[in-house]
Amino acid sequence: MMGDRPSPPRAMSSAPTTSPSVDKVDGFSRKSVRKAKQKRSQSSSQFRSQGKPIELTPLPLLKDVPAPEQPELFLKKLQQCCTVFDFMDTLSDLKMKEYKRSTLNELVDYVTVSRGYLTEQAYPEVVKMVSHNIFRTLPPSDSNEFDPEEDEPTLEASWPHLQLVYEFFIRFLESQEFQPSIAKKYIDQKFVLQLLELFDSEDPRERDYLKTVLHRIYGKFLGLRAFIRKQINNIFLRFVYETEHFNGVAELLEILGSIINGFALPLKAEHKQFLVKVLIPLHTVRSLSLFHAQLAYCIVQFLEKDPTLTEPVIRGLLKFWPKTCSQKEVMFLGELEEILDVIEPTQFVKIQEPLFKQISRCVSSPHFQVAERALYYWNNEYI
Image (cartoon, rainbow, N blue to C red; front, side, top):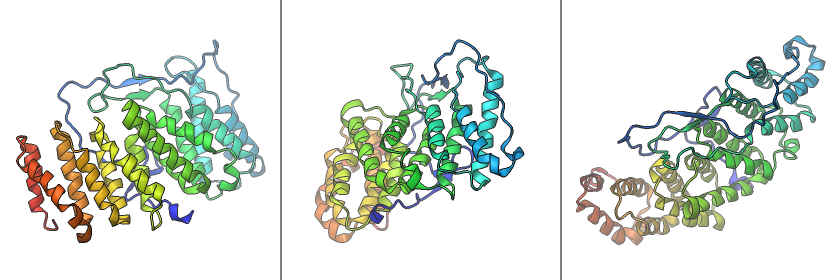
């Protein structure tokens, strides 16, 4: 399993608060030609109305009780935070919402600096609290015309609590006291499946946290690695061949970039198949610009690992070369130049003829941006 050890992403940035996460890569952004819709705030269907105000019994602060009593109080606070509030009703339970927010803040600080709190009894309670808060049915887009390239995303109304739950969970996973051998009873395949479903959230803040959470789980749970790769594989196949809709493709590709970096040599057949059968066909979808930078990075990572994959990759790109979309042609030319920068001369000979036939067609393209991008190749000293 050491062969599949994930290496750190090439660049890491802070999650929306303080925890590290993989850098966002701005993939070929396109300026809007029409007025973007205003940011929408929508609550997921996690809340079930109870018909009466929610009351939580205030508990003392962890720092105010003797150290031997803190683990038990920690569990009680986790249980309290399983209560989920309706944030679409801005006037309901204001006092209790604020109490839960302050409790979550306290828990974040506690797991960051305290020692001895992670008893075996704490693991199921942590996973239960996190599950109660983050796992829910995502709301459908409120417009069939929603375009992620043009329109503002739906923002999760419960983010004031949800953000702190994610922050807490990341600190929990990164704790020096964290023991995967105990946690694996609760962070299992079912948990990972539900986590992956959340990557379809329209809220980019949530996807950014999910990216960090999944990367930490992949790094700490060796027994889940193959399962995680398989499920990402399935998500991409559904995206390409069935739905062409999934909000978290860019984030999943960022995670894969660091996973691919850690693959041992020689590459397993399953990894090569993933490249040819999944990553290359991802170039065919209409929304390619939303994740092209991350996809190209993964392709280049594979070629740096195994140069013999150059021929199937180049031939795959030529097979799916866009015929009517100049924007995609420009993206393909950019990716092709990245590949040529790492290609080995022995591999280049195998694909030089079909490759330069395509480049020559681009140079003579009636679309000036395509022709201009192809001519830029002559500015590359290596090529």
